[in-house]
Length: 329
Ligand code: NAD
Ligand code: TDX
Image (tube, rainbow, N blue to C red; front, top):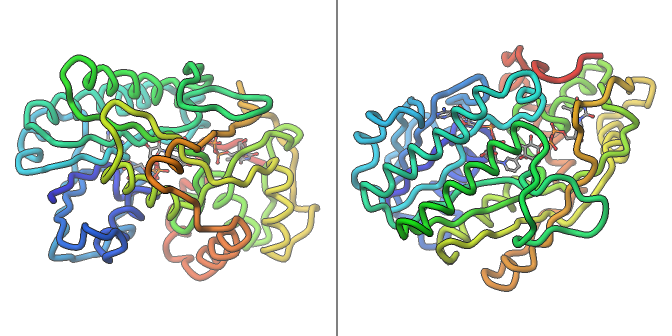
């Protein structure tokens, strides 16, 4: 199989590609992979193997239809990770989010249709459903996104679905919980806090810290994407959960303990505008239909993640924009 993977010099897509090339996905040992990535502030070639016989890297924009005409021929499947992904940045300015997440996805769908690509996996997010005070969303919930980021992902999902309904393109959508793990850009909660705490610097907790998130190890998420690529059904949405819900305050407590720091480093700062209170997905469908089950406990995953940041300073220290978009202390 020849797979085109967009956005794979970022956090999640690169984990997917490295695992595939390492033989981690049975049946894909001979696959060739083309990565298409613009290498925005969020992408770095350090996330990918420098040379691999079955990997090609193309630096480019998913909105560039001419480039897509050259890249697409010969590919059997698209796994679409590329996106502007940070909520705080979308609050500062939404244009890049609409451009990449909406128009870029539409350009890819159009190219997939023209080049008869067999499967298109649209990697999306639980944030498209909005915020839920109790219970869990299943895949039939209406989309009520609150941030410009979430709205741009919801728009992309709907356009993707329309290419299935109208043109018969085999589009499959995944909506997952908050990812964490080695190699995440240090603008997101866990890596921001870990990199700061390792250096004994203060961390900014938004509002009262009561907001809740469901946490999913990146390896479990990528495993789910692979299951959907191999066995998902056209036009279907699959939620992917991690199973562990924590308030940001509880998460902060765990990170302080793992980094050997105290609460005196925690600063309560102004809340994020429109801050979603809680996300929680019902992922019974992917468990029943495709045999998905998360393999990482949050305890093991956080320990591994903190150890990775402690031993890979060369990966995150040069990324001086690591705090851009988040409220400073
Ligand atoms: P990331 O920000 O780490 O990486 C995004 C990648 O996309 C970067 O390499 C960047 O260079 C590339 N990119 C951005 N704009 C581009 C463009 N116009 N053309 C080509 N490449 C472009 O993101 P991530 O955390 O790895 O997220 C991957 C996907 O998973 C996104 O679609 C995101 O919405 C989704 N998702 C992420 C999470 C999470 O917790 N991180 C949770 C749910 C869903
Ligand atoms: O400095 C911070 N302080 C803080 O309290 C940051 C960066 C975040 N937070 C809070 C806001 C959220 O309640 O922590 C929680 C997690 O924040 P983020 O890491 O920014 O993630 P979130 O906004 O939940 O969105 C993430 O999960 C869904 C990803 O960034 C999205 O790409 C994904 O779709």
